[in-house]
Length: 88
Image (tube, rainbow, N blue to C red; front, side):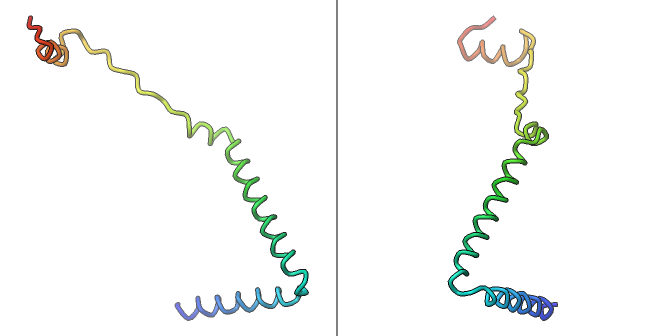
């Protein structure tokens, strides 16, 4: 399995080197920079488009938990009364 990955890695390097060797030396930098700009623009467009999607907007909406309505004679109120020094 490891040999297969190393063989694929070697083949991909050879293909990339061969395709870069076909580009004249003076134009190579422009081609590489142009491809970088193209990929950056595609990534930015994909990111922008994904955040405009309604499903993604729904993911970021926060639903706040409503507080519980405790009865007035709850243990919490009795403890508050004890800590405030008020006893019934």
